Amino acid sequence: MTDLEEERVAGLGRIMSLFSNENILTKEEIGSVLQIIIIWHMMDR
Image 1: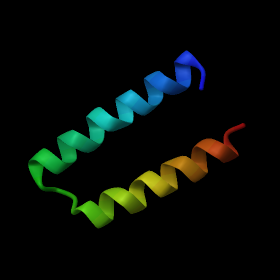
Image 2: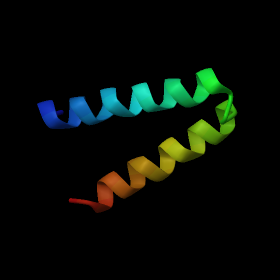
Image 3: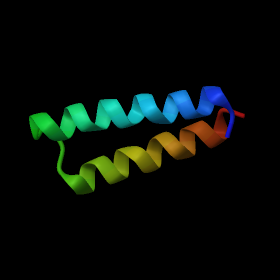
């Protein structure tokens, strides 16, 4: 993983923790959002 990718993942982690702290998203919703982001990230190459 490059530094940029690590920064992206760390940023995603912060965003996800914000959502979970606010209880906007359930754990299942966070999982599906992460899957979408990962797929989108792979297609981005």
